Length: 447
Ligand code: PEP
Ligand code: MN
Image (cartoon, rainbow, N blue to C red; front, side, top):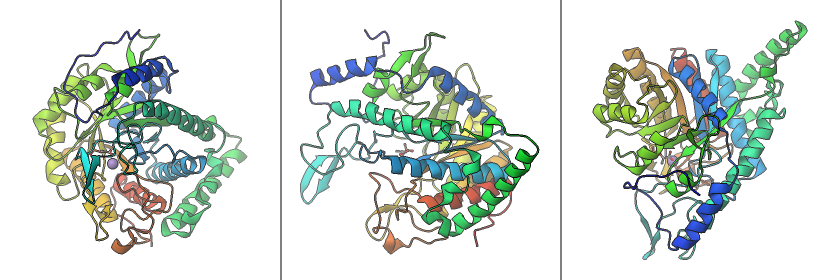
């Protein structure tokens, strides 16, 4: 029996499941499956995010735009994890701040789309809404929403998280492994080179500490959390459980759950869902957000003003971030709400490249993060983290970076199922740039 009841509110971007009986069967199964994350872990993350909102830590969220079922291989998961761990090392070491690590992992199977249908060579089919709903392949049968894909989402999330937990707790993420995360193509890049220097310095510091007899446990394991957009509410509601300790509902499909730019209507079902669950939650804020709407959002989602509960993830675009974000931050802070401010420098900077692919420029990404830091510096508020789309592989989806993926190379290795991601070298380079911003010094560059 579903003990949770949900009001019937308008919900944007929901799949039109053709067979309600099949859907009900799937949801009944999902409601009884074991949780993917624990409520206590979500509370722990909320405490970490609260620290970041005070400037005592920095949040790094990263991973694919859209995870695919076939993409959940050990190699791909390890490569993504390595990228995030390397970025975190650069930030922790560079800025002397703890880094809270959240993967866009084990749940990014659902995608909002700007158009419900896709037209190719005169054929019109439903758009791809993520592997959790239908197929990327442009196929009439495959594009019909299939609720059994919700179960595959759960299973893929489960095996992904299992491996992530093994990697982060079982020795792979031990600080003494800092060099080994750099042992592939990335070592040959300018960012990899600079990373090698940092790793060398960390090694010497560790050897010194070991010689002094210190071998703290914190160096052997890494706290790593999962996050995804709560888009398909059938899945998220079926994964919501009452925590036996507190009696509060938690969405146990991931630690951190956010509401996207296209579903953040104040009177809509997604915001209502986020308001009811006790996970730490985020909301994407694009350039059309009014300062008043942001305050109203904070009232709805965090009426008790719990630190770490609410994160605003701004995604304005490099060209407008300085004007668009400042009035929002100012008004929210003046209202007395303390939210965690995070910058997503990806989604406001998507454009069509010369090869016809969706792309983003590294310089725009780095510039939006810089604008975000400048806004917070001018207001005396806290720039608490970044949220990026990245992969551990050597893809050519975003242009620029020191290695210089050119416009005409964008098609060469274009593997994303949705938006263009920073490759490993570009991700590492961004970490060095952000460490400079955190220390309030100009980008030192990699040469
Ligand atoms: C995303 O994070 O992949 C996404 C769709 O972002 P937004 O909701 O900000 O457009
Ligand atoms: Mn995206």
